[in-house]
Figure 1: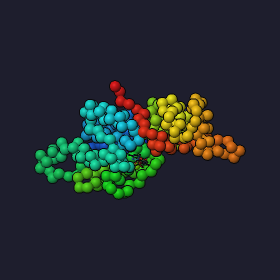
Figure 2: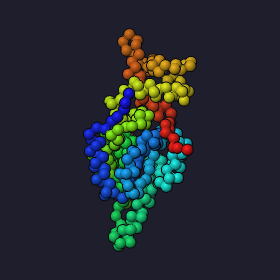
Figure 3: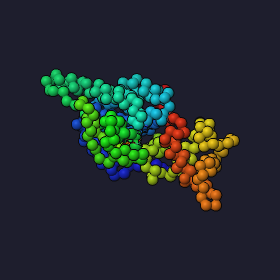
Figure 4: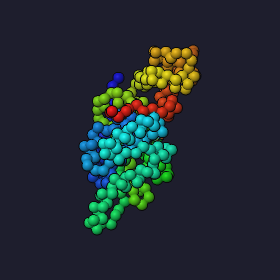
Length: 283
Ligand SMILES: Nc1nc2c(ncn2[C@@H]2O[C@H](COP(=O)(O)OP(=O)(O)OP(=O)(O)O)[C@@H](O)[C@H]2O)c(=O)[nH]1
Ligand SMILES: [Mg+2]
């Protein structure tokens, strides 16, 4: 199975981002704390150039705390501003505005030296679909101003939002890259919800996910789905057990694999199967 997703609105968004970047002071690179490697756009260095950049690991509530600490240390060792946040619960978001203003401080100092009155810092939020860009903006605003949703591709246009007096943020549509070369990374993007469920074979993705869970976290699977005895190695059989436990049955008592697969995927994404960090920084 080959996973790839780059619809027309993303190509358009990518062009718009390049245009708008010229107008902003700071780029906020929003990564998924569960997959900081897979969720990082490989062309971001070239796109952002030498503009100040703040790396934000969102959905930290869904990632393993130790993994998040290691990633923060990794980015900071590379000389980058990095912070972990939970845009839904609010954790870490208060410190973010301060980090962004700090990143913009040299620019403001330059303006001041020229005798220009200080203005609000302009920042753009970049990130893959569904990583929580709009949720983060709403959290900073304190109101549900921009549309969010539990599927990728919700934001389609750009929108400036004023956060207090000193910060203006640009919400952007999530962008993936035209070719997902690394298919293991593509798989992680699929299970965490960055790729539209319509473009990949859900059954295959669920099979790989279940296999990973069975090998590395069998106790979590057993506990969550009330399974008994040793877990079957065959993915389909395991899915059948889950389906039976959750009443996913068709007429005649046959397991509805489609429905069972959707349950596994959505509970994994919602953190009901525990917290996971699926990418680790290089040693
Ligand atoms: N658990 C958890 N869920 C989050 C967090 N931030 C956002 N979400 C959820 O992630 C989903 C996507 O959020 P959005 O803010 O719409 O994501 P986006 O990056 O703007 O997505 P696009 O506009 O499609 O590119 C929503 O269901 C949010 O509730 C977080 O920190 N933790
Ligand atoms: Mg959005």
